[in-house]
Length: 224
Image 1 (cartoon, rainbow, N blue to C red):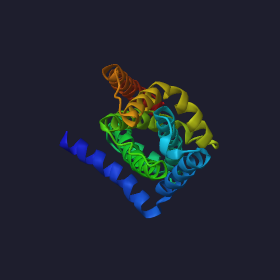
Image 2 (cartoon, rainbow, N blue to C red; image 1 turned 45 degrees about the vertical axis):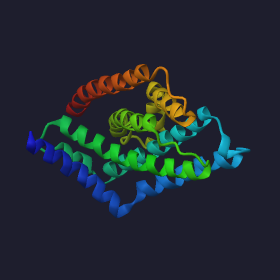
Image 3 (cartoon, one colour; image 1 turned 135 degrees about the vertical axis):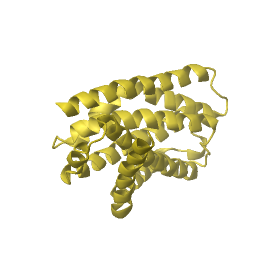
Image 4 (cartoon, helix red, strand yellow; image 1 turned 60 degrees about the vertical axis):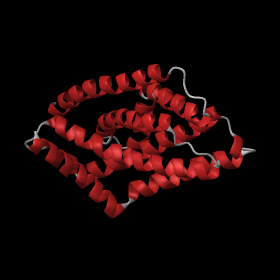
């Protein structure tokens, strides 16, 4: 078990090290996030008093689309350099490779969220950080990363992988996006959420269900 955990960190560390050298994913996330949030801020008549519903929508729309761009670039380089095929030849469980990619994307997504929240707080003169969004972020990231990893590997074989990846994951992520926006709205409004336990159960159930299903399907697809 300790050796598997070590291998998991080594594979994820490889992805992080490559990104630290190239900085392509972080730059793409930063520029896209700044663009999306800035457009909403410029077109709003009074950015300091936007409704909580609109604010939560701006934050998570930026996160979803910037995360999609990050994932497409991540798997494009994996396919281009043929590193994914080399990793799949390693004498380790296929599921371990899947989990290592989830961990890498989880970290990249967390970085993008920190940038988006920082830009949002400056442009809209608001502090979106609250207990609700701190709960929403890891639950959302886990589901997003598992689905993105699964479909990212599939779409990396396609020439139009960036468009295909976005088209594949966004419809599936709708329940998770609803969960995240509702909790963020509650945090921005300061009124709380009356159905917090219900939404949290939805988000956690979504993650558990898709991680189990996609882990099983990932092994089957790779074996074929």
